[in-house]
Image (cartoon, rainbow, N blue to C red):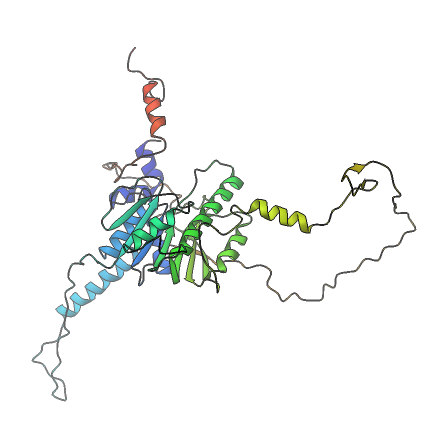
Amino acid sequence: MGKSSKDKRDAYYRLAKEQGWRARSAFKLLQLDEEFNLFENVTRVVDLCAAPGSWSQVLSRVLIKGETFGRCAWQDREAKLRQQMLNVFAPDSSSSTQTGAVVDAPKIVEKKDNEPRRDVKIVAIDLQPISPLPGIITLRADITHPATVPLLLKALDNEFDPSAMGSQQATNRVDLVISDGAPDVTGLHDLDIYVQSQLLFAALNLALCVLKPGGKFVAKIFRGRNVDLLYAQLKIFFEKVYVAKPRSSRASSVEAFIVCINFQPPEGFQASLEEPLGVGNRLPEMLEERQAVLPITAAPGLMQDPASGAWDSVPHKVHTADEDDIYDVEVEDLSVEHTEDIRWVAPFVACGDLSAFDSDASYKLPDDHVSLDPVQPPTAPPYKRAIELRRANGGAYKKTGTK
């Protein structure tokens, strides 16, 4: 699809290039911040699955440079306008009230340009290379591998010694962990939802190693049939769990974002990627334990020799139900109310101002509109080899340029 048709289809794709963002997903994080105030009192952040770096770019411009966007920028403009109005219509200092007291004009403090903050540390991790960003430490690593934790802890704390620390726990923990990662979708929704849930668990396992009590965790999810189980599992570690849908996220997509606030790990819990949440590498042991507990059942007419363990096919007496047999069936008492909560549903929150662009709508562009190039082209896209082969074979439509 050409750039002009894509611009007309997606307003946020065009706005991202006009405002200097690397990807349209930057608006998703900004709208989540407007709703949940994610960046309040945050100085240490880990960005997982960060490529191409749009969320890290938001962190750099908001936390390090001190820029404001969206509702915060509007509030700053309104406050500045009110200060200017007070300065223009300030009463004369020589005038006095009925009691003779002099009324002083309000003092207007001019806001200086925001200087870069030195106490902010942001680490971005992805398997794909990320182009440099101001104040961002980038790591090329796999978030599902246990060796990633020492690399991350070393990036967060230069004095970290992996040999002197037995457990994979950070000494200087972070305030916020975000993840915008998603697998290459196949179109099979059940498979895509399962793979995305496993990616989310990998991000959560890494976040549990570095997140401090009271911290926040934000990650992308695909909503499916059994997503309630995922919400309940996250509720074990966080006080509040929300499902958010930014306005910049297409309504036709199953994509949503899980926002977890106030990290409260259970007493005695020790996070480690060597023993991750879920089954992990313990599946064979769990199967053996389950088979040892389950009773041995056999079909009617089959007997097992205790010595050899072989089954014979000698028919034995089998009881069959007759018409005169009577069975007692216990009727469930429906009048008893079940007070125990057997299901927990996470609140669903729609983020973003209703006056913002609709990501599923198409907008007419002016006649003099010029399509801009992306701010940061992909550094090492997985489809790079496919493009080279297509060019070598004469292009997409076998156009070799010769007649």
